[in-house]
Length: 389
Ligand code: SIN
Ligand code: CO
Image (cartoon, rainbow, N blue to C red; front, side, top):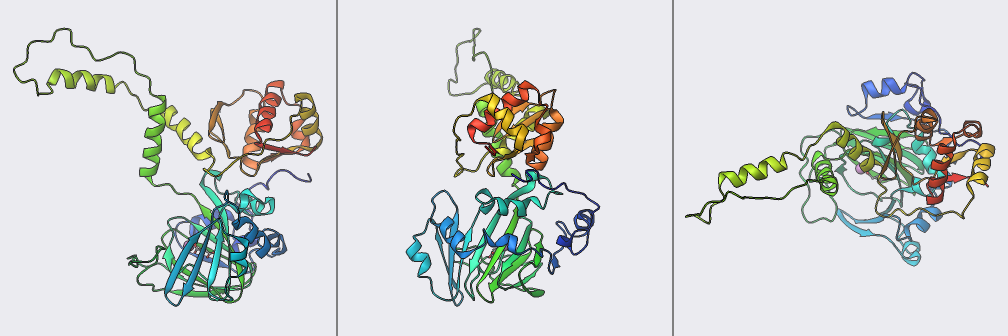
């Protein structure tokens, strides 16, 4: 393994990615505010070829543990089909007017993950996935809005994007996709390989393939507060522990047995008020929820390795988080794939570095405390880490 750590985000460095702007300037001027088109933002388009090829995307779309969709268009009529698909079906698609979208390509290909990790100046907690679409000329998903920030990186061929901010977000009736009834774009740009378009949430957009083309969408996670609340309450239900039971030893004979009286209400209210919600519970829920693997995700358990061999191996060649592993931390706690553990006293900075950079170089693995080795060895046994034998 050559380098196992993602590049460090330097807020002041000017990046080709943003047309020579620094991440700090991009965030201050564009992020969640206005669109940005950067020509030749990604000069090394060859880096995208391995995972953005027709063969690779078709192969992923055959799998039932990968999310894929096929949108076909006939004039203004769109049809949507969900994967997994049969190879024969994909290979017999017509020469025009379809697009195949494959989500979570970063979970399958390290080169795709590296594209995501170029956005390391943003919190990993906001990053969702890298979706890749391949389209025949005329193919696209139609005019729509997304509720999240997206960077659209053209990997191959050309795609014409029309986009703009509009008030009228009325949706078309009777179509299987959420398409805008009226679309009034203010911009029209044709993206060539290496060009990047950033669109904030709520921008109307429509991308149509000019020739056979491949587009990478780097999408960001922005949960609805309702979604967070429901998940938090589910979590609370699993963790709440109230002792005692309703009791009424002084009960008097009732002339209105149908009534729920004030004493009963008071007793229940007093019990329920003992369900406390504090900052620590919210922090723990958030870390576990953000790192919870998506439903289709499975980890591949590697052959058993003795702890001593594992320690030698990582001291020799470092380690990397598996592409599917989600690792975050806060002041007191580490979160890995939906589990929380207290931040160890020793090696805390190394473990934070592992979460930030998604890997550790060999030299960072040489003087780890036995407890840290045990922790990492456990993760390795679950398939959460990759090492080079
Ligand atoms: C795409 O067609 O690759 C991107 C779809 C989108 O606009 O979200
Ligand atoms: Co979109």
